[in-house]
Image 1 (cartoon, rainbow, N blue to C red):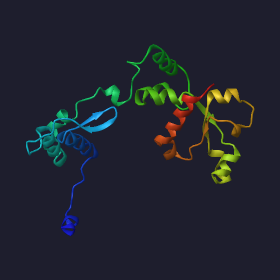
Image 2 (cartoon, one colour):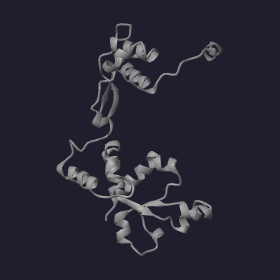
Image 3 (cartoon, rainbow, N blue to C red):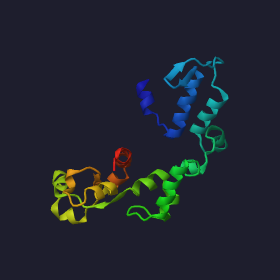
Image 4 (cartoon, one colour):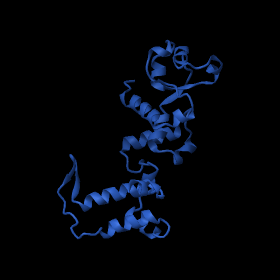
Length: 202
């Protein structure tokens, strides 16, 4: 049986369908989500066949084109502003003022014209950083070739730069040096920047 299953070809199912199927299937057997995790406690489906919603999910997963009309039933439309992580319209007055000030001010890494295409968080986040040159110690530690030193740059917290102006840069925090575009785009990098901004005492 294993050989038979392995010899069969399967069409890849989109992850969003897999996620919603697993969630709905869990509800079918009586699982409920609570603040403390998942527990059995809901009424299970004892009919012996999938519910209408679960059947719709399976049909859509098997043939997204033929069952396109079920998309809106299974995946309710979300405000486009939330999809783009634009929250200034529901933010507090102080947060709204911070975003407004960033849109007026100049920054090295983001421009006012970038605001419609960036999340509010990223737009404000990159306003807190300025360009800086990596110290030689950082370049040597990363085994970067000397001929590339003149073309590499980094990001430095603008508040740390002002507080430590004139000091040896590698002795204080707030400096980040992505080695390439992939590292700059990685979610862990923006997470590191966010962590610094959240804990920066300057």
